[in-house]
Length: 418
Image (tube, rainbow, N blue to C red; front, side):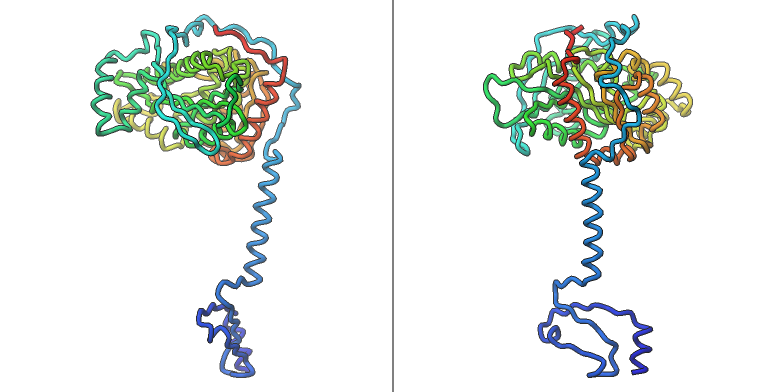
């Protein structure tokens, strides 16, 4: 027995799973064989009590956190704002921006590309002709169209992106069952820099609750477009705003779309774009912008995202400029910056989501933009940028509730197109 006690002190207890039924049924104890340390045999698939306790406590913790988030405990409202604070009409746009985002008006026509049922809703993809002002038109437009036709046979991905130089591509999510004369609220959505994967969840969520959600595809971002400076960045941003406005023109022709209940949702890069759209597009009733930041030159130069840093590195390799020179070029050419247009955003039509530990656009830059907008309704997520994106259920329910309240409010009415 003394030997057994020494073995017990030296050898930790272990649990061995035996698949042989004969060995499983065998029970060896110290009384039967004093040369063995006590070993506990378990049948295959049997869970020990300690493991059960560990998994149970972990499951309880996950469940508790999920319930707290679903109840909105992750959303902190640090400023007791009045209902629809900032509803007063903002000042008119300065002369330098009046007409800057206008474009030749034409009868919008769309071609249906695909149609499928996804997760309880119908997804239809359309392509529309993109109408641009003369200074935004590509100089070799016809040559680009021919190049796209030739490229579609062997490089469809690049061809699809190049088509966005002269087309507007949208994904329309709608309920499966709709009455013939029924009009539905519409949510205009812009994707993040990484693509449509994240915003697809929001579109299906809104469509699953009886609304229509429209995702406007973005072209692959760039800082240079062949010019000897970074003026292509401004052309890219300005064209993106024009895309969104033209989609609203097309929605006005759709009998199922209720444009008196038109909302706009943007997250990350989409939120930056919608921060500009809120100042220049009066037909949108309410905006939910999640995790934007400004000024844009600072966001671009300090963003750790691989896609953004790749654009900066490409500009450095092409021109041989230092980081300070690249930032100076961006400050010189970018006019479509939310920080410039923030004073002209009607604060009562905006709900602002800010990630407290955002290192992608920078929490400090998000605070700066929020203050420049006149401190609209604010909700803070106690996460970083990617943590906020991954917290989809909370953002979905919170944004849906914000739109629902705004559509019911008689104080928020839409204005005709400028």
